[in-house]
Image 1 (cartoon, rainbow over the protein chains, first blue to last red):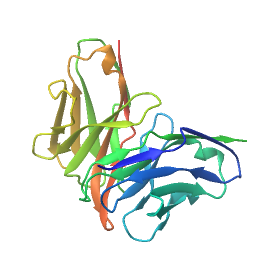
Image 2: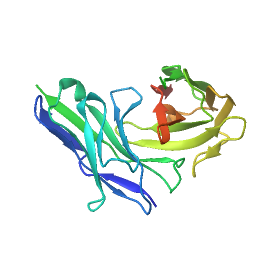
Image 3: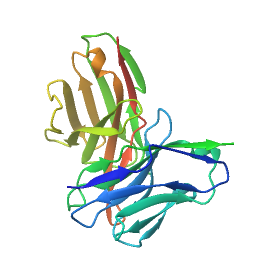
Image 4: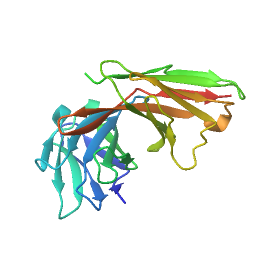
Length: 115
Length: 117
């Protein structure tokens, strides 16, 4: 069965410093992986996705993630945090082998950005 | 493109009444929509998968008679919380699926905050 584990429930960075949000996955198949962001009382916005193409995936707002099969990781990074990046971030894996499978969400990481 | 709307954005109702939440894909057609529930500071929990023109598929533990889902058209799915109780208070989020690039992507609505008094 597929699953994702977000290793940090809360990450705090200063504005202008790098962001690293960690995610490990478990999958019996070649996974499809996603990062979503949720601002307070808002729906989720897709940041980026990995679907077995390039292992380094670039997303919106300067975020990127690298798929590392040997480490079963899909960490989200950004070189320089902005105040507007403060939000909840979810690492997500698509379930089963079909690309129409259900999304399985991690528990989320709250990103705090300090001025 | 790929915008999903929900209505209402928030609703307060009395215990025992029913509430309907609408989910619309504004600029695309979605044969499949999903309904999630999110408790404060927690992740999203899939409640059911809604397919246009057929019965919804509910996740284990979700009462289908309490959470009625209707996907009457390719752009509209509704969730009705029947005989609502305070424990049904939550943030309900819908999502619509579209095939884009080389895979399916899900786009999420802004959510509906339900408070049952």
